[in-house]
Length: 509
Image (cartoon, helix red, strand yellow):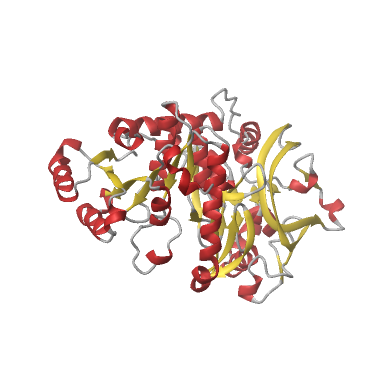
């Protein structure tokens, strides 16, 4: 039986739409997921289509957006690609990789996307919804929209906003960001552009990121309710005051704010950076300051630098070379610098990058074989098939510990034949997952394919202590909560802040 015929038997889904991109939909869904979990419900997050290079790999090896993975953690369940059945990963020049149910199935231009992918996209969304309900008949879906639901040039082919809302007859919340200004126009304009049947789905309005005394908005709240006949079910305060930098996990906008850091970390801001959530655990370490590096400079002020993942490794390596950053990184290494590359960053630290199938950016720059930075004796060849899998291994360096994470990459990396004289060693018991080299003058160069490496508490702490030791700082013997426990604590704290100011009762009936 098709899902549409079962709608009376399932718990009413809640859908969070926004008046614009960045209105706070992801944060709101995360908070609602945890609130409902704490109330004894079985929430499951869902976003029909997401565009992001910040990805997660589920336990079946399927790719999905990290934001839906985080929402799954808020529900206390394992992430699954069904929660984000369409993932578009931008490659530049208006081209994106298309991922359906966790598997890469092609690429598309923005111009041709809806012509070629609209029908199969809607089918995969319906298939995911049916599968979720079949496996979890008592669940309540908490659905996130994308951008604005009333982009009039796109609304007839929108896959992930009002089409999903109408298909499920969901109770919808409209979220607007008062910090941007023009909140009344945002709300009224969005609702006026909806058809009457679509507008009837909007059961509540949330005013997000309100600064100051909430009582001062009472007249504004009454005006909105009188004008729209829709209740304002929440006025959410500006949360930066409630979440200091060490308690934020990138759930809210932030920068490192420590005034007297003991460790300074520089992360290379690649044009095609991916999986930047890899650095959340570092951003929540005390006494560490993180700075993004965007242009050529003397890197000596940093205690270690990170080359992050990349969606277009060839293209980003050419950027490093042309910008002078490759030269800066080599000079930094020669001056006892410490470097760690993750995935694409590992590949760029090697000597050679070869892209015979134009998978990693060579199509955009007409160079299928280029030199890497040359600090590790590694050769990478990009093949047609992508590797995506969860990892459970054990590290050898800088300590012995259990390691969990995931891989997403096309390239296969091997040691060059003359590596034995260059003193390169495996980081893990599975040698293909990463290598490191200690420099005679001091400093280390390391690279790994494991995304989420810094989420492993013992490994992260030992790597930081290795840096601290080189600076003659005392090692940290921490007995604090693990990163994942801390993440859970922060989601609870977020949910509690929302729960104080949000009335969901009418949406649960």
